[in-house]
Amino acid sequence: MPYSFIEIERKKNWLIVLVFIFLVLLYFLIAEALWLIIKFFFLLEARVFEVPPIFSIKELTYVFLISLIIAVFHWYLSTKDMLNRILELLCAVEPDPKDTYHHIFKNIVEEVSVATGGKKIRPYVIPTAGLNAFAISDFKRDAVIGITEGLLARLNRSQLEGVIGHEAAHIASGDSLLATVSSSLFGIYSGLLEVVKRGISHTRRASRGTALLLLIFIVLSISQFINLLLNMFLSRQKEHRADAVSVRLTRNPISLAEALYIISRSWRGVGQIPDSLAPIFIMSPDLNRLEESEGLFSNLFSTHPPTEVRLKILLDMAHSDISTLKSGIRNKQKILIEDGLIEIKEAQRFLCPQCNQPLGEILYEGAPVFRCHFCGGVFANRDVVPRIIIREDFAFNPSIERLAEIVLKTYSQGIKAGNFKVVYKLDCPKCKGKMVRGFFSYGYPIEVDSCQSCQYVWFDKDELETLQFLSERFKLKRDE
Image (cartoon, rainbow, N blue to C red; front, side, top):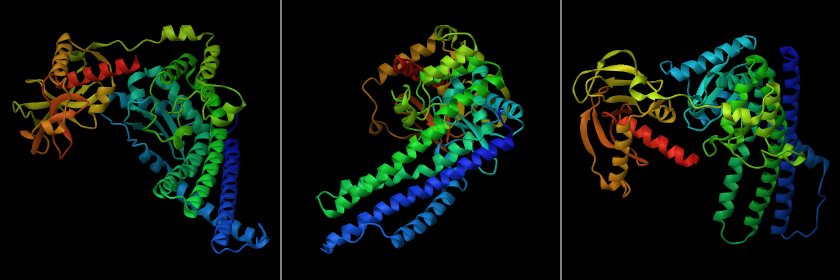
């Protein structure tokens, strides 16, 4: 690290003080603009044609004091418990101790934590197929590194180490604290703008009330624009520093370059990850041309540097080039899906709903499920199934492909919820309640038995594999 942690904290503390001063000034400008709008609006309503002085020391003092109080209140609400609020907003969860993918992720976070001086870092997982990672921290020196299920499924261990090293660098340098504070502070304006937009749309006739809302909308838009500039100022250059520190931690620039290339070619979570949280992620969820260009305009209006520039710097460190990188990236080698079922233990308390035999707990694509060794059925938590669908470790037998084709042909006319009668067929192995027979989702016409009480799903033999196959085929078509 270029500085000691004490020097880093001093530097970041000054920047955070500047952010607070900026917040006070921003509220002052907004409050003064709103005051002037309201003052002249009421003068027009009262038909008072004598124009008072635009500014007065007394009014400016009152406006400043009100702005200071609002800014302090805003700061307090935004920074209080900000880590848990961001994690809740992202639907992030702690790693499943029985999941092999999650276990590897947790181990890498612990290793990188030791390499950065023993700072305690908590790992979290976002249950989405998008490829991205983030780092956040607070004033209590609590820190979190999060990663999406999609990224866990697509990257190998060395690539994951590069990404986690990058995020740990943000935490060690204090950049994550600054980004967390700014994202938490300024995410509120998008919500206010939506409220004003709805107010304008509901006011059908042109009136002075509509004009007032429009002026407020313009003021809030300008404030959000200024906030966006601040986030971008705090965000873009720190990514280059974090890339460099990650290479120092892992001694492997190629792995981080491969990870960035894979992320850049995939869906990063736009639509699921709020735009206001883009600065905390390794790549912006929203892909646009401005992010991938250089120049003064791009530097001002982009949260992250261009991927091409980041890759070039990393590849220069490794004395390599982009063509070599592309040819070197290989998908994980797949094996037949039956070979991927690793038994953990017998779970005597769960009995198969079909043949009343004990279910064994296994790892399926690294995720914990229960399987009947007699009929081949699988009993899984509904939250675990999306992990299995995202991951692509194993190949499929030709019989699964044929079964998937039959399913698609059978339901080629489309699926409508009203066309099927609810059937209570099996007893839930966990809570003994009746399970409902129906489609797992209407996107993939695979019939399963679901328990509405404990949120577990029963897949008969080959149903889970067929669901996986259809999902992977859809992803291949989308990528093409």
